[in-house]
Image 1 (cartoon, rainbow over the protein chains, first blue to last red):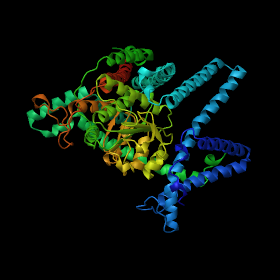
Image 2 (image 1 turned 30 degrees about the horizontal axis):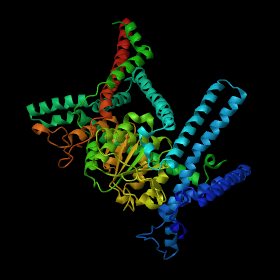
Image 3 (image 1 turned 90 degrees about the vertical axis):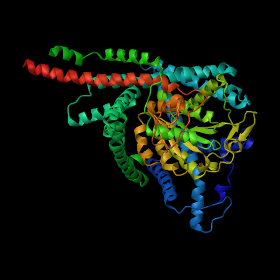
Image 4 (image 1 turned 90 degrees about the horizontal axis):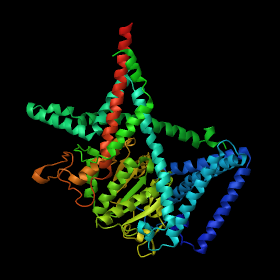
Length: 304
Length: 320
């Protein structure tokens, strides 16, 4: 039970470039490939069982973590007094390992995406399908970006112990190339894609946002109040006007008509409870769906 | 005006709308002006918290955004870094999102702020001694759960290259020395464009004081956490960030020349000073006039669209 607790130096924190680390990386890589190959050769029925077993074990771990009595005031090196405490210690120690596995699995999605992209576009280029030139462009962009990124990383990691490359004044061609591709091209294109939403919102606001029912009127009124509250200049002018009016009439009730007050009321009295209610609903749905997947009732989740 | 006019107005070419949007928002980018503002309670709480935390305790910054939301999130992170660096608070940052460029984007922002400070003859933050970057954790839920469980195991074995060129275990650096659990951090700030803050609240809110900076789309989802005091404060959207910059310049309940108080936040007890040195009105101020223009245009479009619809109906009825 204490094995995990004693493993202070993790696999990922071993001395860089040490032979022991390289051996472990190579062995893990070969083992991983072997397991993946074995899974691809497994019959359909067995695949379902494998997926179900992994899903059930993962779910069981987190359910135990949540329900099992927690080891209180545990000090490093403490041994469990009984089996219940032993399981608690084991769960406690296993959390970072499970989290590492979850991180790696999520990172695998990136690899899976790249693999799929390469497969699809290689085929398109080979068959000279319609617009295959864009596929070439995509592959070249992918390789160039990865290439610059890795060389930059290698230079910073192994050839720049003083961290001089962190400052732009010390950059070389690789850093400028990486910056041009990442900051100069990729990021600008991403921002441009995202900003297109503004055009659609404006067009939709003009053409589709119509007062045709009570619901749409309420929606429009709340949207208007919240938009006005985001405009500080307008809010300031309005608030100053209300303050002057309150000073003249000595009627503090008028304070309630400040835009920030009305928007605050909409947010705290209408918006927040609605969000809370929706999140309760989503949470219950997630529990129901989680249970179905965990117990293998959701066929889509466990079929391979 | 006859029905044909209103009909024409309703069917105005969308490209006309697009041109109007481009022209007006482009003009707005050049109108950098300090606009008086009534700051949100959540922003005031956040600023007060940042200005009052113990400078000897490090801060955790989880930065989960990429360039598509830079209008808001880059302004958020810049604003946060300016406050931390001016108050000489050490920090550790990482990204917990499957959006791979997030960590690189945050690293670039730190470099920009350092360059800005260097130009202003202010202290430049050094990797290893003043801050540490932990990299990308693609699974936010797992990362936060692990941090909750045991920070030394969650980040165990990681090394950072110090200014002298040697690699050191992160827990031996001046940034994390003495940190044994999440409770040893002064504050955690999640800068996000997605729901990653939900995981932080679910897993960490009882372990460390939690705050956030999120886009205008995500910010309403943070209100229930703020009302329940699970978030000690947050800056929502560009308005929230402008609030922060405004408070960085004027403080809270802080009398300036002639006794004038710019930010009168009754909810905050006592006075919170302005930042004092470094840049205060920056990116959010640059974009705030544009936000006014964009929202005014949106309101105008909705009003004109509806007026045209009703007028067209009325004109048609009249013709019948």
